[in-house]
Length: 95
Image (cartoon, rainbow, N blue to C red):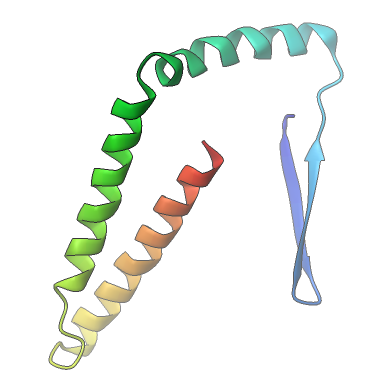
């Protein structure tokens, strides 16, 4: 797969994967994939524990904001950080 295209229509997200068909490119990608996946095979728990720590740190930081007492700017900053945490942590589902 070279990537994907996506489109939002009528409230639904439609994803189309771009398939690699060139044999040389497939071999190159396979070699790169084997090198990239090796750290996960060797120490998955160590890598995943770092991800969990990062996610929990982000959530702890978000919980410090008292939404009843903060200014509009602080609330906007917290909202932006919430979106970054949501998107950042969501990316780990693709690992």
